[in-house]
Image 1 (tube, rainbow, N blue to C red):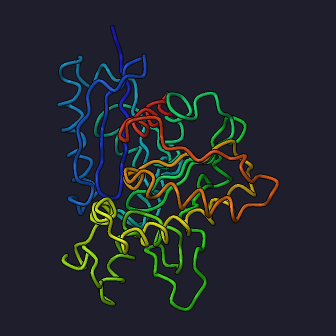
Image 2: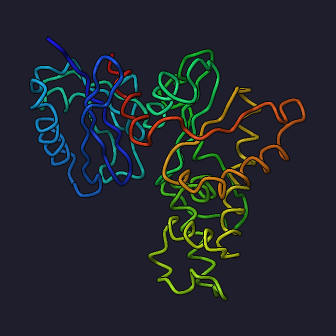
Length: 316
């Protein structure tokens, strides 16, 4: 009998559940809104219903060996979600145990960016690489660090929170949901870029196309669309965002000397608008020892597939 794995990519906005066969194909997927469930019990129930629908044409839940879940602040060692700042449920959430009790299949948990890194290493741009860093640019900034072919977890399971390194030490540094100020994700995520645009528009957008929008509703997609139309302010926002990220990538290179840094997530859809300033700032800021040696690549997988496949591989 053919058996399958379930892979969950839980983001701060959307959760995507995929069914994966033994050849690494995502044969079915469906999503729910993460923020729509104020109680974790309701989220788990919605996930169960999703899993039942996905697996029904393929033998049902009994045909699934296990589930792997890439979740914010997911602890590989304990199976818990611990104090995730971008999720509706706070404190310690025994996610793996709840999945086992509700779906009847074992569940293995890791950080969502770690899951993406595993998927990239097995099936994507990092195939055959043994040293690389995965940076996810979505609601926040996540990261998965692979050294000598193994994910870096640290002693407590939380190594690699590069989105919360300090990118701004000034008095006006942005407040982060984690409680600190100046975190990289408040500048370099899709939400961070929208925040930059909002601040600029509140100060007066001039002739920018973005000035016609409600500052509270501006998204990174709006900035991209404006840049594509030649909007100089939008281009400046990309330069500002990419420069901050590139400088931090130079710091990340210094501690692990990766072969590549792979960018993944919604903000990467902006292509050269984000890539060009990132690479420029990184190479201007990195030690000469590594200048020009570290590749910066976009993910080689479909956005949803990397995390789903990575999570499924962790389930094994």
